[in-house]
Image (tube, rainbow, N blue to C red; front, side, top):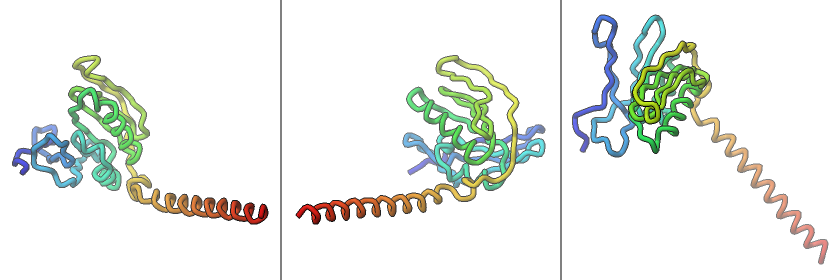
Length: 187
């Protein structure tokens, strides 16, 4: 049974007021915390919609697509990694930026912190396991708008897969028929 403790990020405004909070949804196997509901948390900062995911949440597209559907321009992703997962997890952040057309600010403990453009360009990064502590800054373009992936997700892959299966089946039948025809000619 999960505890009532949660892995939570709190968004605080310039005046110190708590604007909203987000509870991590995709827990790693060793986390015994209350699980979040996956509902996007969006606050407007300087006229730009800004959201948040925590660590392992950006390895999945369910939450990231919701942010993309809502036209979010920037996502903050506080993260805790370790050497064995840091590169793969970093790649997930790049993928989420491209899929949903938002910038990602990734603050990582024991891994790679980065500022990633909506096109997947790494504006600045720091591998804390190699370089130690530090701060990174960069100017990053911010867009808003919905991508095809944000709207449709992975489902367009299914018709492509079905068409591929149909093609392969027809090709196999054609080859089997050719072999049978060749055997008939030889007898």
